[in-house]
Length: 518
Image 1 (tube, rainbow, N blue to C red):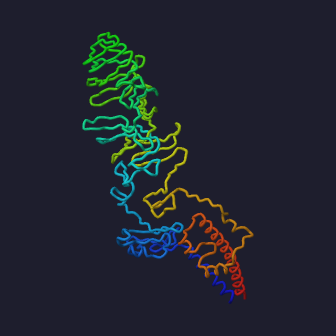
Image 2 (cartoon, rainbow, N blue to C red):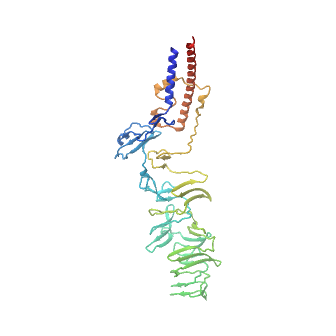
C-alpha cells in the first residue's frame, strides 16, 4: 500500500511538471509553444491596467518592463494619455511613452520629418558636423566637396565669410538693390590682400590700400601691370598715363593733364612694356566686355561681362588651368577644369532656412584623407545614409539619441526611444560558460536545500531577487549564463526523477504480475 501511495504521488508530481512546461491558451486550443500565455479573439482585445498620470507616478519602485495605459493628461508634470512602460537600467529608471504615428508624421514631434523626397530637421537649434558645439544653423569643421550640384545663398545680402580663429578676415557678398557682387577683406584686416592665381602662381593682387597688380604681387599704384595689356576697344584716362612703350593700331585717348613717356605706334591696339598706372579707374564699356589674360601670346584666363553677369575663369584652350582665390599668401579656394571646387576654408552661412543645397541624382558628400576615400553622407530617394569605407563610424558627443532625446539617460552613450532589431547580438563573457554543471565532480544541491532556499529567500540561489533587479536591473550576458546554469541543473534533476519514475514503474509492474499469479 505504501508503495502504491508513493507511485501515485510521483505520477501527480510528473503531471504538474508537464502542465507547467506547456503553454496556456485563452480563445485557442492550440497555443503557440513559444508563449506562456496565448490570447486569441476576433472581437475582443487585451485591456491594460488604466490609471491617471498621478497614479502612475505614485507607483512605488515599478519593475523594469511594467506596462500600463494613462487615461488623462497631466499638467504638473506634463504628460499625455497613452501607453507607458517603465525602463530601468542600473539604478536609474523612467517612464517612457510609446509615440503615436501622427507624432512622427509632418508636423509631429520627431527630430526629423520627411515630406516627399525632402527631409528637414524639427530641432530649432543648430546642426554641427565635426563639432558638438555648433553656433550656426549648419556648422562644419573640416573640408567639404560638392559635386553634381550647386551651392546657393538665396538672400539679398547673403555672404560667404572666411575666418581665422573665428574672426572675419574676408568675404564674398551680394549687396545693394543693384545686386552687386563684392569680394574682399574685412575692414579690420589691414594686411590681407586679394590674390588671383592659376597653376599656383599669383596672377593678380590687390593690396590693403586698393592697389591692383597684374603680374605683380606688390602693386605700387591703383593699377600696376607687369606685362602686356591687350584691348580691341579704347583706353581712356582722365589723368596721367605713363608707360615705357605704347603701341596702338586704333585710338588712344588721354583726357586732362597727361604725360606720355615712351612711344605710341600702330592703329588698333596699345601694348606696354612697363606698368599701366591710374589714379582713377579703368573702364571697358561693352555688352560683353572682357579682360583677357595671356601667357606667351596664348589665352589663359579672363574677366568678362556676360549680360548682367560677371564671369571669371580660364579659356577652353587652357584645360589644365584652375581659378584660384588666394588670401594671406595661401590658396584657399580653387575650381579646376572639371568644375570641381576645392577649399581648405570653413563654410558658414548666417542666413535662415536652407544654407547649403545638394541637388541631382543620389547627391552625396565624400570624406577623404590624403586622397584616400574614408566616409560619406549620401541621399538616395528618401533615404539618408551615413557610413564609412572599411573603417569605423565614430559619433562623438555626450549622448547619441535615436527616436528622441532621453534626458534621464545621462550615463549612457546611446539612448533609443523605441524598439531595436538586429540580425545578431553578441555578448562576450569572461566567466566560464555553465557546462561545468555536467562535469562528474559537480555537486548538485538536493531538492530539499533548493526548497529551503526558495522558502527563506523566495528566489533561486545565485539568481538576483526581484528587489535587486528592480533596483539594479540585469546584465543580459551574465543573466543568460546564470539562467543556463539553472536550466542545466534542472535537466539533471529531471534525469534523476525520470530514473526514479522508471524504477517505480518497474516495481509496480512486478507487483501487478505477482497479484495476477494464482
